Image 1 (cartoon, helix red, strand yellow):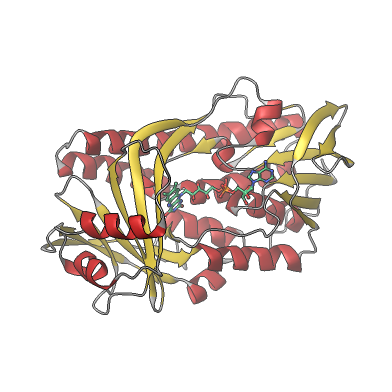
Image 2: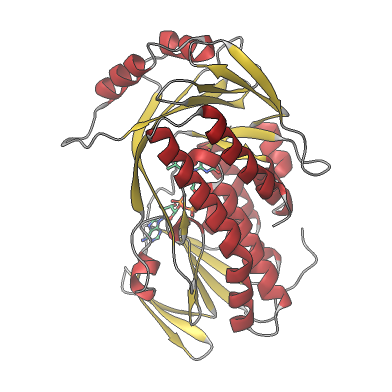
Length: 379
Ligand SMILES: Cc1cc2nc3c(=O)[nH]c(=O)nc-3n(C[C@H](O)[C@H](O)[C@H](O)COP(=O)(O)OP(=O)(O)OC[C@H]3O[C@@H](n4cnc5c(N)ncnc54)[C@H](O)[C@@H]3O)c2cc1C
């Protein structure tokens, strides 16, 4: 719990109850703002993947007061193993703590992380309305008139758009921004039981489709594989997803090979083409501001998209508590976040491009290591 208090605004509407939106609502409510949250999904669900929680992301969750629950319900470690795609071990990468009490790296199932965050939202008494979005936003004086999709109205001192890469808030209030740009790669993911021999996260290189495994709990993992995206006319059903991923894993050994041999049709399997964009400034318009994938959507190459969303939420709340005016706070938020998010988006996109060009693994590794070292610096 922070000792900071926000005096510059009394009320805020957060549009989007994903990782970024919940983090914003929590960070504002803890600083005394009457925050409300809406989400388009009537059931406020999240899909069944796991997520990698890097050291900097764990640090952001510590600042949000949720690191203990993540440690208990997810998995944390201080090293990762690098293998050749056939299973040959190349090296073990030390991933030391970036700060006292913050593990080097970790993972958790997304539904478990959502439940931890939703629980905190409920504890703080933040009103949540579901199956709802905004249809009009107008900054009027020191606040925003909001028209909701159910034809009700509201007025808030600040509106935060954290409504995904397809943000409606962005479409309504930020005409200078555009959609995310496809990168040419796609990401396969599977969530399933843990291979018995797996004791830390693993990366598999040396194949045109790099892959990795993250431990997400005592008996749960997710695996990802990046491929060149082949446009398709129809959506793959579960049987096709299962058969195609199994086939893509055919040359793999080690725990990746175990996953291929033990995956079942009931496991959660997903394929998604990747897209990214760092939106141009300004990230705010009057009293409407964006955060998370709505304004800095990235690819998974640095496993940092969610971490960036949580950091942005914390920085926004800190600046609102610190600055003399809301306008000054929004400028300070934008300037503190822009270069760090640009680093993540641009490096992630560059790594993907190099992978598509079959660049040397050491070239990719040095880009990745450089960015991860910069992300370890305080945000
Ligand atoms: C394949 C893949 C793997 C990834 N792996 C990792 C990883 O390992 N580690 C990591 O840190 N990051 C990872 N990321 C990135 C991470 O998932 C995102 O950066 C993060 O989820 C962004 O959070 P968000 O809250 O901004 O948006 P979202 O998670 O998209 O949440 C948006 C919320 O807004 C709601 N919503 C949508 N539209 C509206 C609307 N019009 N009105 C109201 N509500 C709306 C949605 O229902 C949702 O609840 C990955 C991304 C991809 C694509």
